[in-house]
Length: 147
Image (cartoon, rainbow, N blue to C red):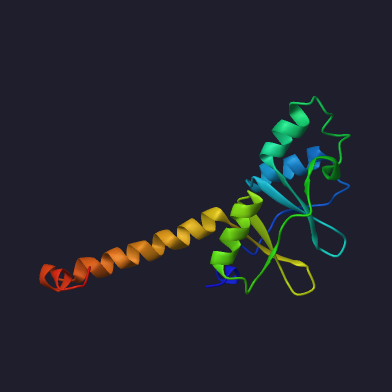
């Protein structure tokens, strides 16, 4: 299965030049913890999280109104395409030590966002389906299965 099947399509974004205060306000209003920072062509150039606001702005005593998103964002995020297999996206998340990946089209424009939670939800649903299937099997049929 590909990330295009499980990614969210309504992605909240920020511009590199906007203030951290405006980005934080958008997170609060939209009830999200991450914004994808995009350029004028809607290509991901960074990511900013609520943790970034706490650690990189508040803890350092920066002025949120005067600090640009570009100053605190994590630049050059790893991205995946819609056709990327989920297993590959997980490997990228693991190697990049991140929980979210922007999903881009062939031209590099933002199409969606896939998160570790999205993958875990999918796996949970699949395990539930397997459990339901096994619950329908009789004990005799299950004991006849090779170990």
